Image (spheres, rainbow, N blue to C red):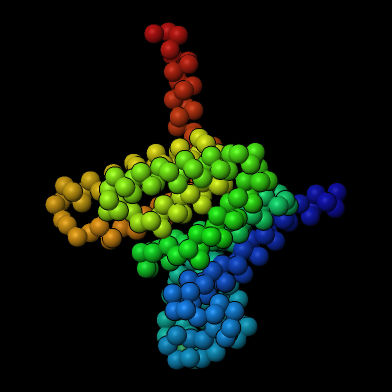
Length: 264
Ligand SMILES: [Zn+2]
């Protein structure tokens, strides 16, 4: 009975831990491009240099309590900080619900945190640093080790990385950067063959959907205006956490054909 209660609270505990990790992700997104340490010194207000104390550093709660402003100079603090914390917290809860108290949950949670960092970093800088790709690959491989045969991880990475390399070469780097190719390969470690194929296929569709209006409008010079990383991150998260969601339309179609095919 007591273990049932512990299990019921596990997603809640995971989400609280995720909020703290999300707070760290904010620090990483802000400091990595500036070449600053992510551990030291403690955070300061970017406007007035006011040192942010522990009570002002509680994820989400402090931002709400301070009305989204620095306690010292009243400069607005971006809503993105609590948003990142909430997203990471939610992904940790999702991992906990999906995988329970297992190593798979730990790997999937940390992988999702790195991917959130990639998403916002790419939006800001149109760049996916190797400093994010490497931990992503290690965590994706660790996740895979708890879920599939080892061969699946290498096949997934080869298909996702190879597929993206083909898109990269075919578009001469106009559609995406090499960082996207490396991130796809890293994510592929967490995916199996069919989910990797789905990732590449979805990327073709998204790429076309993004490129077509630009081509039709005839505007040029927008090659770098649309970072591909955020899309890759979202597609990767869906495929890692809920591949059944991605495959539902195909399953429904196959079912429909089976039901009606005989009558035709
Ligand atoms: Zn301030």
